[in-house]
Image (cartoon, rainbow over all chains, first blue to last red; front, side, top):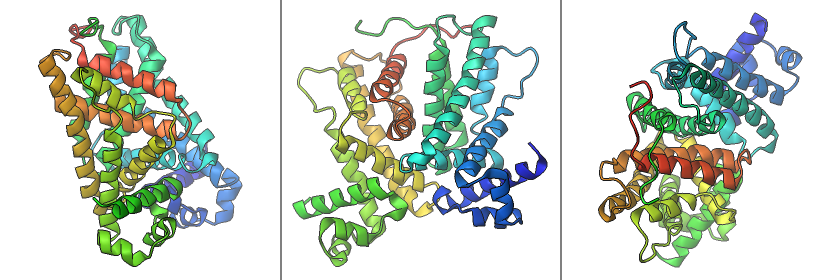
Length: 195
Length: 195
């Protein structure tokens, strides 16, 4: 993707994180980026196209949280990636806010659902890949269902993210709760009490 | 609370679930309820007061999901209560949508945060009470941290709820994932792999 498109998507995310998606108009994005609306329509077709690419942009920026390092197990990479969602960093908060706004709006706006569905599935698959890697390197038990665990982890992150963005939960608490769930999900358990 | 106030709060919830909180005006609620705006101001003071009581109204309606039955363990009651959040029922969807709207808006509107914080804490406490009951009746292990588990379960429910309301996840799948997490949270585990 060329620099100009990246710059326009960055402006789109700033506008959504600041005003919310329902206040997000192509005119505001153009003003934020210092370009004409025509340029935005040229690159993205329409508002829906712009939002779809903004969601991908958020996904791509979030992929750097783990910063794939040599010698790390799948389990370690997974943990780095999910904990990366909660950092005292403006860009991380912006990513989280954009994601929350678009998926929240999809409850009311059916036209957004394919965009949210595709972006969510991409995220779920990315985390599931770390789990698969962990199953192969032995850091994660072989009977863990990678896609199901990833679905639950991403849903939990979304729930925690809302509280964290609204300052109802600290960064440390969000990371602590997430760590607990990852450990539970990836650790073989006894039969439930009462079974 | 008198019937008239209940009726006004019901109208408030319908308006939020239909139009979203940012489209929610006291005028719309008055029109939905077939009353004057003055009556709403009389009962609730202002829009913030109306929203605070609407959140409590949602909490109260949701408390009936478990329908406290004689002879059920704390664990069974907890499961009934949390699974009640995902039902193919218009009022349950409306509850979920209102809750999601108000907490989503609190990211952008600081004035809403005390309302969301109080309503969330009430919900967390209600679920923690079932867990405490389960610890006492032996259906839940004594070393389970009731408040922490309840915090994570409610966050997960919020994350799943958004996907469910946007029709990205079926009722059955939402209930399945929630059951998995409850079982993991309440079941003693082996030490994590690698420890």
